[in-house]
Length: 129
Image (cartoon, rainbow, N blue to C red; front, side, top):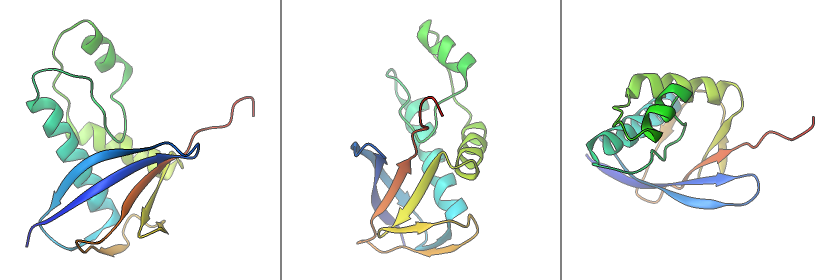
């Protein structure tokens, strides 16, 4: 069964934007799998595109951004982006909400439906603290 879901990115300041539509080949997966599949699909879309800035869950490392700014087309490695995303999740860089409930365990089993609402809430660090 192929499940297609729209994912929303939100900030603690209330900014919401459509992160994209993502496809899942199963309705039961772990939070870790959800993050991996999102990152894989984002990176594939970027690498397949002829131009444009990368807009994903986590940004590429500085060296890749610099190359991108110099107009050299960079090919992103989804595995590297995935590692950055998992590190960010563990470091409270973002939260994942499924139907408005916070998912805290990367190995927690999620049950998705066509009505599932998935939100990645980016946590903005406080300045001066």
